[in-house]
Image (spheres, one colour):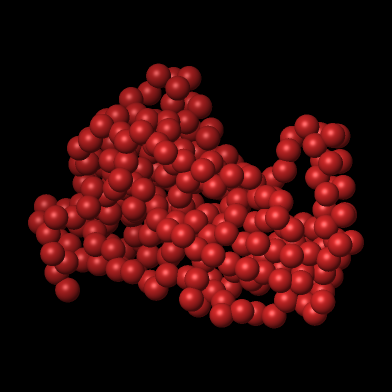
Amino acid sequence: MPPAKPSKDTAEIATSPTDYSYAELTADSATDAVTLADECALAISYNGINHAVMMVSPSFVEDFIAGFSLSNALIDSIDEIYDIQLDRKGDALNAQVTLSNRAFWALKEQRRQLAGTSGCGLCGIEALDQALPALKPLPTSPLPPAEHLFELRQRISEQQQLARSSGALHAALLVDTQGAISLCREDIGRHNALDKLIGALHNNAADKQHGFAVITSRCSLELIQKAIRAGIHTLVSLSAPTALSVQWAQRHNLNLIHLPHHSPPRVFSPAPTRVPSR
């Protein structure tokens, strides 16, 4: 059977960029719109067996699957991928990958050894309902005062002690009701940094409703889900959120604010009620 050829791809699978409205966290609350990156949950099955689910940008998905399969030693050669069928439904993208018999046998053996020797299971989540779970919406909560975000980037840099000495570290922080940074946790992994902060919030009985959390990393869906589960009412990101992150934040009453380098804070959730100014 010949190797898989690029299909209609991903141009048809991916959604077109969409403009999302935001309101500036300023006295006049000016509104505008910006295009946000798209993401979706990708479920990969090999020869009919679920392997993993991960969040991806829904473009050049076949290239990703090929690279993922090679870099994770699931195949030895790209020729062992016979076919890739993609099907998108809402926020989920299913990939049915057909492997050669040799590659599929090796994959099954790898799965058996991983489960038997480490007990950790496979990397990733094997069910879409775990990647896109039903979450309980948060109670609505007021936005933080704009002055609490004043020079926040500089103040965060001063708090990141590990990053100052070594670099390459994400941070998750808590800004308290007085506008002061009261907790800072750092990690090479952006998910890890937020998990550390969530643990510290509970260990220190911090006020998650009236203070707000800040992440220095990009704001993707997994971090939105973590914040909602942890009962954090406001999340501020130094990087722009993805489109799916905004949708989930609005759906679950999580206040979501992007803090650009040289512009006023942008409130994406709750959804702006005024028509964009441009």
